[in-house]
Length: 521
Image (cartoon, rainbow, N blue to C red; front, side, top):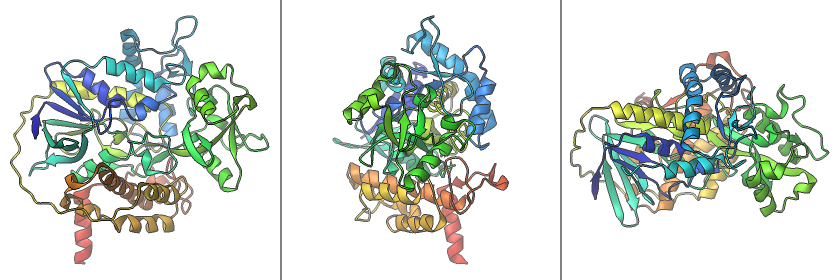
């Protein structure tokens, strides 16, 4: 079954919906999601959207904070562009009626989060900004946008010239092909590769694996952000405790009530996320539990209604003022390498949101820059596609034969636990090498295209994507011989100047050539 359209968007998070609603009305747009619209990380976002709209704030200050948090790995041009465009994005949403929170005097309420030097976090519903924003974006989708749910995209279609011309998806009713001159990945990150994560169940790194197999360049895959404060009950993460809680005065403490960040970083509890996560990790590794002391937060239940309900559901007595926390995988700074409108290195293929690596996050994302990135790049790509006039060349018919996939595959739980242990908050060479060998014992990345993924169940497809993206992260982590931002390598515990502006690029055709040359020598 083949269907033609103007723009295909894979995903239905903030970046996808912002792009869809901003596209010109003469473009037919199809959004494909493997679950249901709005299911994903965007809806779970608690903190808010960073934008320099305060009287004493400026986009340049926001830019500086982003680069410092990113450990100087940011693309400065892209980062400054994003912080400059942030205030206008917020004003547009505000004028259109998005339900942000306001002070009594009618001005937008501005919160503060880790590594920000100013109060610049716009929020909605207290700690439910993602839900407020997603509900608004879904309501504002225009008639020329069509959402197709439960379509699991398992292949990006490319012609002999390497141009992307659409996708293949699997639905309960069969296998579909969608053809378009513009295909956009907005699939989110890869948090579910790890046993401890704040991410939605659907976030398994599909888009990164799809792009790699289509020949696109990916970069910065080793930089994985671990959020310091997941609610931890019986040694399991059950939800996120927003950084905004520390922004309102909460303090991380040990069993004895001693603050743990006091002499670690000048910003103490609001230090960059990798610093706080590594500190908690070491405490827990030494057998110590860590808590968030919320006694200094005024009107906690009113300011954080979602977190309050989450704690009550899991038996946490907030009257004691202590919330048990531990770090978990939260965000991927790396992804599909793009330019400043979202174009990948494959013609006809674009990426926006967390699946993309635009360079705005560097080695460690500044808090509340993720929703902002999706909004900014969704709008920028819509403008770019509106001006595109290139003709769509109809693809040739192909009858390529593919073989069944190798089995058995490991369980999702085993993949997640191995990634957490070997490629988690602290990494070392022996564990990385061992894990890479384990991953390659299932499917070699160079052999992926030989297999017929349409014959797999959704769960089997998911595991194939997970293994591929795990390989991309592990290989890059092994190659980066320093510690920086979200990548901490215990064999190389310091930042190295020679690595500061060095990006590790993953590209299938290049790596297949290197393997071939190695085998010939």
